[in-house]
Image 1 (cartoon, rainbow, N blue to C red):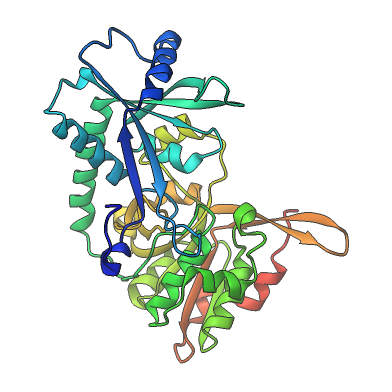
Image 2 (image 1 turned 120 degrees about the vertical axis):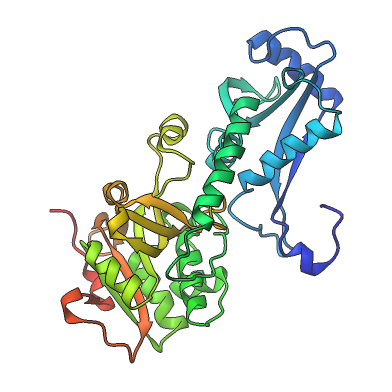
Amino acid sequence: DAREKLKRKLKIVRGFVNIYSERSEKFRIKRMVRAGFVKGSLKNRHVLEVSMALRPLSDGKIVGSGLMSSALRQCCLQVRSLLGYPKQSDLILYGFVDPDNMASARALEASGFVKRGKMKYDQDSEKDSWVYILSWRKLHRKIKGGLLKLYEEGSNECKVKVDLNAQKTDSHCGPAVVQGLLSFFDISVSQDEVVEAAKVKSRLKKHGMRPDQIYKAVKFLAPNLSFWFKQNANSRDLDLLINKYELPVVVNWQGLFYDTVKEEKLGNPDGDRGHYSIAVDFKSNRDQITIADPYSDYVNIPRVFSYRWFKKRWWDVDHIFDRKTKKINSIYTKKLILVLAPKDLILPENLHLESAKKLFTLGKKP
């Protein structure tokens, strides 16, 4: 609610959904009809535009990495209720998205909106935007699937409890994961403090955080904890660390920012998917890994995946600028895990965990 004044409640307001019709919209809708995006007569029908905005803070920054699609879905249902439940075919909700704004595109697609084509938002706009139209059938399918998922996942208690906050932007998965890790050990830090400690402010938006930069932040913010890593980790490693030692395990993988792989292929088949999450449960007998994901749409409920499927996406490519050669080197990681533990906890040697300092020497792909 934009009118909310209580600081306690403002802390949980991350953004706003606007669904509206203005005089200028009439001309835009006529162009949409001519382009074939809206079909049939508009008589006695409601055609409303949907837009989203993040809540700005007093320092000009914004909250969260995007609006949760669950909020957008609820708003679509609420509008239909306020209009007296017109036929679904008589309530057309649409949105325009800049082709570079993947966060908004994902939120719309996760709420049942379908990409119909491109059109200029205004006649004098410099470039085309994607036009999305709500499919009520898909919206209800999303809601039904979400409730089922909530029930199934809610019934599975995770072995490790991590208090994870949504990443501030699409590039803040690293800072959000560090924040969650330190919270597990009762150390309170903000994502901005993590960025500052790792000294990655200038590169974060474009490249995110490398594994060695995560170590750098942890070393500065929590020097009394041990930091380990391992390349080519396996199911036994996850089983021991999570189920026996009850430690959260950071994984660097090709994140899934959609509800299904099918939606990913349709929405963003070639996008950058490098992502940090925290493995919080592992059941080898069920072929099941559970991760806490800082991406805003999934931060509230741990995500359960097939371990066989997850292994195929358990890799990443990062980049580092070599000041001597003036070239950018690519660093390839495969099945990488990062582990934080109390210094007095002795982990078994057969885990073959390596000292964090070796993160700086991760080799280039041969």
